[in-house]
Image (cartoon, rainbow, N blue to C red; front, side, top):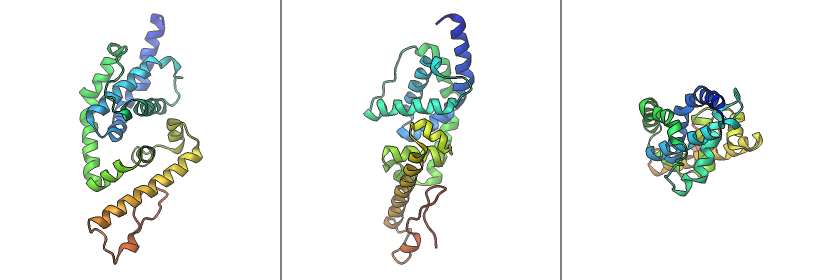
Length: 209
């Protein structure tokens, strides 16, 4: 690649890829449940994005493209407990990865802490106990508030599969929440029927009387 092309791709990378780093870090943190693994996953994602930037079409959906790279990296590497990201050309993207430490990390770490406090330990455990497919689609839809079209592009599945998988994931989440509520006495036997899991089209929830 000649100097002019490299400069153009560097500009494209900074303009369309770097602004999504904080959002991707939130996703990586929820997938891995570990700050170091999440940062490694972000580094690996951006190394691959930089390497294959010539495959990206400018002004298309950069966020979906990056999320797809991150998802595939997680499946291929981090799901197997690998914590060694690809080292090729790290010096070329080091300044961008450093943004995560200098700017993005404090904001996103705080958001993750707030998420834990808001949902409570039982709900976080319920989320983490879901299988990978269900956890991923709930994160993308109900926490990251992505459209079905964006989710379909990221997960590389048809829209119909997005809808059916999300329906099943929300149902599984509701059942786990219900189980935690009964176990810890938040719901008594006399009121259990009124709080039984009820499907909501807008996200996971428990029915109320």
